[in-house]
Length: 417
Image (cartoon, rainbow, N blue to C red; front, top):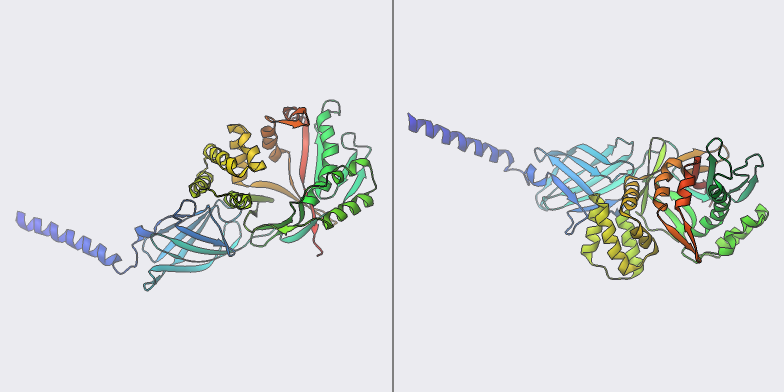
C-alpha cells in the first residue's frame, strides 16, 4: 500500500510538470522570460526606443505577460506629462523564423494622448517605435514668433510705472502695503530686467514650434550678443526705433534649428509641462565640445537621472565639466547639494508653465511666483562678481518674500512665415 502511495505521488508530480511543459512548450518564450523592465541607460541597451522617428535614450519600459499571448506595456516617463503610461491587452504575434514576438496597435492614454506603437520583444531586447499625438485642449500646437516690442506707461502704478513688452512676458506686484523703499531691489529689478530681456531673447531664439507629438523645436543663435541693443529700451527711445534695431540685429544673425528630442511639452491641470531630456542635452553638449568622453561616464549620468540620484549626478557632471568646460555645467556643479537636489527634482518632474490666451491673439507661457520660488532660493546662495563689485543674491531672496505676484515667461504670437 505504501509503495502504491509513493507511486501515486510520483505520477502526480510527473503529470504536474508535464502539464506545465505542455502549457508553454509551444511558445517561443515563456512568460517569465519576457516579463521584465527594458532600458536604454546602461550598455548593453535592452531597449531600442524611437519617438516620432528619433532615438530616445535614458528611458525604461516594462512588459508583463502571464501567457506569452497578451501583455501590458508600461511606458515610464516617456509620454510628456505622464509619469507612467500603461497600455494593456497587447497581442503578441510569434515570428519563429526571426526569433521574436511582434506587437502593434493604438492606445489613448490617461492624459488623452494618442499613441501608435509597434515593436518586437525577446528576453534580451525590445524594439519599440512610438508615434504620438498629444491632447491639446489649450490649442497650443503651432509655430510662434515673439511679440513686437512696445513700451507702456502706467503712472498710477508706483511699483511698475514703465512696462516693456515684447518677447518677454513680465508682471509683478508687491504685497499690500509694501512700497518701493521696502522692496527697492525688486523695484529696480522689475524696471530694468524686462527691458533687457525684450532685446536679449530675440537674439538667442528666432521662433518656437510646439509640435503635435509633444516635441519642442526652435531656431536659435550662438552668435555673440549685441550688448548695445540690450540697453536700448532703457534709453527711452520710441518703440518703433527699438523694434527696427531689434529686427536689424536679427536679420544679421545666423540661426539654426535645434536638434529634435531635447525638450518636450505636455499639459496637466491647465498648465504646460516643460520636460527637458537631460541625457540628450548632455549628449549634445559633449558633441559640441568635440572631446572624447568615456562611455561609462555617460551611462552613469543617465542612470543617476533615471534612478533619481541627484548627488551622484552632481559628482558625475563635475567630472564631465572638467573635460568639456561648459559654462552652464560649471554653474550647476558649484551650487550646494540641497540646492542642486531641489533644482534636479524640478527639472526631472517637469516645469509647470501657466498659459494665458489674450483676445488680440497673444499666448503667454510663464512661470509664476510659486514655481520661481525654489529657483530664487537656489540663487540666494550665490554671489555674482560684477566687474569687481560683488552682488549677493541673498538680497533678492529676502525681498522676494515681499512679492504677491511675479510672472516671467514668453509673449508669443502665431507665426505668419
